[in-house]
Image (cartoon, rainbow, N blue to C red):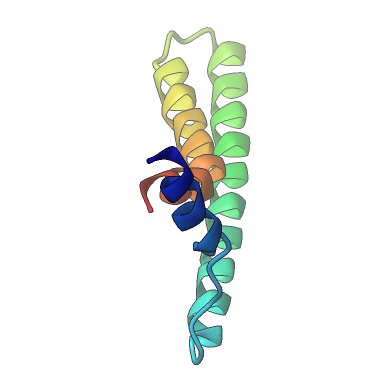
Length: 88
């Protein structure tokens, strides 16, 4: 039983290749990933600037929750490839 299973698993190709004709889609996904990363960095910079201005004015604000949401988005962007790979 175990020998037959190892023979079957040895014949499987664990490295799938990209289907022909999907080069444009791969380019679009790469650009989207780059834009999402860029937007996340801009979001972090804007949140940091608002936190600094709020602190300078002496105002209490909810920038920590905004920072948490931006950082959660950054984590999702960074982990998206691994998440999709785990689901497929």
